[in-house]
Image 1: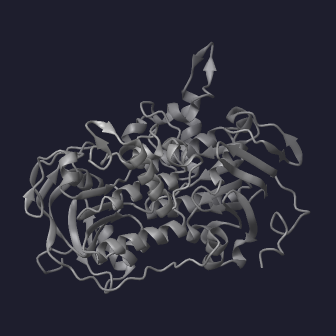
Image 2: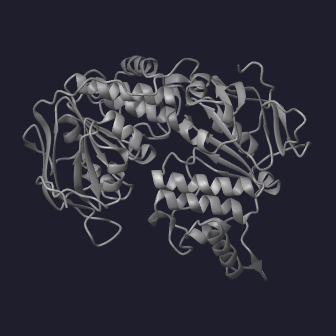
Image 3: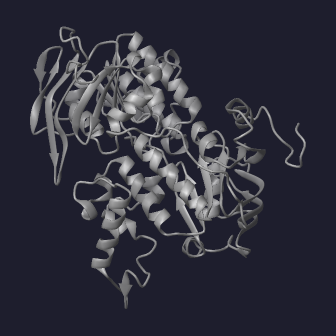
Length: 525
């Protein structure tokens, strides 16, 4: 059905506000964009769908002037334009919210929004009018922000609002959203979808890069699919299904439902008793008297709306943050005072929430990152010297096994890889360590449906091999389909224990919102 569609989705006589014609972009060892054409109409939301490393962000970076293509041209309102840098893009009305935000953390919200286009009078920056415009835009689009808050002190959802306001402040009418929902809660995602539709209704043109099929079906008008740097096709979303889009993206049928047998829990691996963790944001504790056990052969999921103590809980378990009181025992051995390395050696693997801050050394090579926690083992060193051939052999094995795509294989710098492939590298490293407990926080964040399918299978395989899996996820579908047992956190406390087989998504949502809770001693209140 796809081959019969015209290059830009059918109606060749429609006017495009932006056209990218036959774009080719090459990096060392990889053709990131191979003769790709794309047309964007005024007042439409055009989704760009593809696997991790398919070339989506690269194509948008070409449009925004961050990269120069080897071949092809860009047309604005039918006239060819040259976009040498982001300033040229801004002058043409093109704005971009990047997958990893481009904000100065020690600056205020207002300073970040006006950065580069500061209003001046007699050579001095005047913020009064800028503040008035920012607050007017904030109110109009329901993007409530505190203009005086520092970026380092606000949530990722709030940071994204700042990025959107940066575009609106510059009067951009062509808006690029690169994986905008990857770090948002379900509630924030719903809000963003409404805002995007408002933009489109006003006549703005939106390019929306995502892996999430349900978001495309909910909000997009058309969808262009890329696979391994090549153009596959453009479809009208109203005529497409999730199964058809996933097959276009991956090149095969994808199992969208998790298949697993019933869990057979064994002995307790991790036991947490009365744990209290302080908060860096406010005077109240982030984790309040939390107790739970994780057994061999089960996937226990901690669910909750972002900011309810899950992050601090995981930091305490992995050793990134100290605990105020309580105990953390692994196979009966107290770990609460132990270093991160000793916890790792005791049998804990950790797929972290923030892959850049805690998962990778971005300026190390891929192979160096894959042995970060094992380089000192006899397999990879002798008498203090690294066995580089063994590291390379191990790295190539994981790259093949976990389909980690990069331009130069093992020697690729981690920073240059796509976000999804950075995530795959972390997952490969942590699962291959073959530990007794896998702490997995937002493991499918930024992954395409094919990679999500693979990760879910790996989590289930870990469980079925007798390992204990502690999953922390904001994705309700993931929680319901992967977990064997669910604990809900609200305001730092465990407020409910649920069985995904017998509870509904609505009931889970009530617990997450704090509208319902168990006393955890059998009764409900």
